[in-house]
Length: 286
Image (cartoon, rainbow, N blue to C red; front, side, top):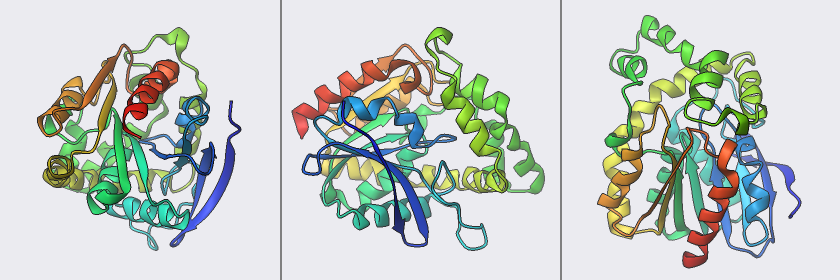
């Protein structure tokens, strides 16, 4: 098992915390987490891949241990998350890398890939959408806020950040409770309760609508560049449906799709299975 290092790197105005393991000269795998998590979600996956790959998992701005600039100094948008990640990869002199995306990490990573297709060696999506087919009927409050960003509709989205929703809806739905380590959701709940975190997250919830607007661009990137693609998906995810995984085959006919018997945070219960699937996929393409 390769040792994991815990580091920081300045990327523009943001000091990015990240986890890294693996040989410096190995192919790079960039792991981009989702909401409401951090690079902590990859804690079990990283050691299982680091014998063969240089694995790097940053915390996005406003998440985990990456510093969160004040909202007046930094606009919390997905364009800016991608900009910081672009600056982060350049600061580390990462010229070529595969990207593993999850949830919020998907629109962040796909912005990187579409802007710099020459850098991306492969894409892996764990419950990360690029098609409308992937959405369940649980997005009503967010969609209402997108259409009318009033204070009332903003406040209606606050429940998405509650401890109950994080634990019971995002983590427990569709999982085997005996395989679910509470460390993940307990850390997320603690970090989401920090002063200022809720308003940052509500800004990102509003800007999530920009991701849907970018889907045609992402799909054009897929068709034009045909990156090797793997979808590894918790089939019982209450927010991102298996149809979202299958939809990638429309533009990437050679995409690999694996549906696992778990929920949104598949790595919390199936990290060994995911690691095996990822290793097999990357061994064919890197």
